[in-house]
Length: 102
Image 1 (spheres, rainbow, N blue to C red):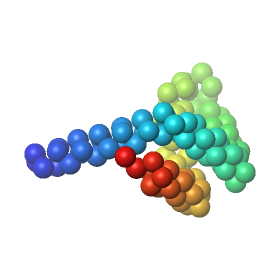
Image 2 (cartoon, helix red, strand yellow):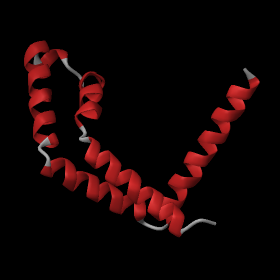
Image 3 (cartoon, one colour):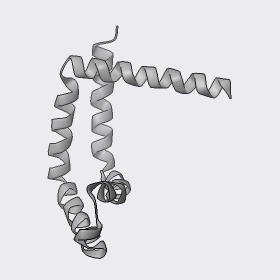
Image 4 (cartoon, rainbow, N blue to C red):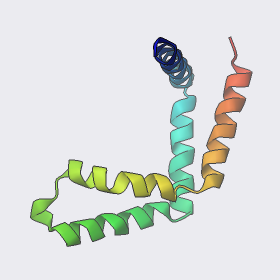
């Protein structure tokens, strides 16, 4: 159990360090813009908008909070991101890390 916690702590620190470097050098914002563009381009944004409307229609506007909507649509939203978009982002992050390795 201790080994698992240590591994999780190490992974958390590594993720935090990577995120910090991406943010400091402005790459995180560039990646977010790329992601927004790719998701719009592939129709993801429209699919999610339609799904939100469907959930609101089913539950009724007065019975849905923003938090409820986020919980409801997040799994589908993640599943609908095309593998090609995920791969491109991962490739760009790896290239960034290789270029800026400390």
